Length: 330
View 1 (cartoon, rainbow, N blue to C red):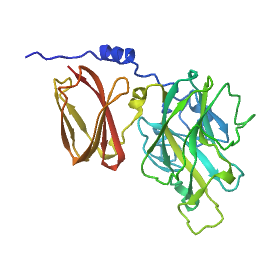
View 2 (view 1 turned 120 degrees about the vertical axis):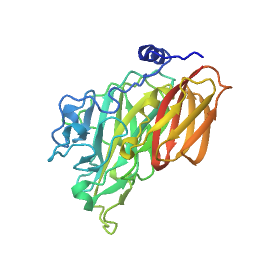
View 3 (view 1 turned 180 degrees about the vertical axis):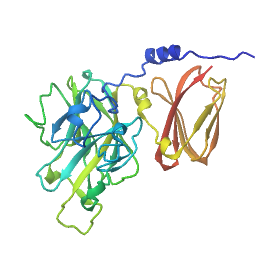
């Protein structure tokens, strides 16, 4: 019997050749920074490749985990949340009662889109519990992403103002302060866009609010603050799968997928949480296999009939945790 081992460099080169890592968004999970944030309003000055287009968005990073740190992870001034992956995420306001059309937008330049090409777009969002100001927290709709061409917006000299339209958005209320939610969609480029921004692109008259901590407050005296993580844009959805992060570190979850490489039999096991969904894609993003599991900790797949090659497996566990890995079918 022959056993095969694979050099990580060769696999990395193969993945690159096949189109992995073609996310058009730089620093998509805000891991790269100039200096560790010292306060909640350091997004504009510290996050590499990203900018503020209105007010002072927040930057949270585990490097700020000190006794008095307000910009740490998972605990910070606005609440408690682990990143989807890595050690950092952004924060922005989508509504605040004391400032007309008060918004915060985060923006970055991207590799230029090609007119006529459709692009897959995704990002994660979680509602903050507003920490020490929880008595006036609320939720809004219309959190989304918008494309721009040759932008000149700036938070201090030319701030962006809402235009009541977005290219990718979620119209329901984001009320969950525990879990991350994936916002995704497709966008066909009608211009050679080279910038994106995220936030609430609707003014107060077109934005709904929902009181979370004080439902008897009829004056909408509240602020809606959201965490943002893992932004991706690509013509091939498979290029974004590496950002379908896992919160497994919160639960000390261990996922095993074996044997890998495999000739046809594949086992997937979880040490704690139940497996609820399994989805498999080709390296070109084509859906190969999808099945809803009945909350098993061990799942067996027979893939002998699949063509030889690399596949991407997404495993969804209960409590909304995702795990993603690659396998080689010999």
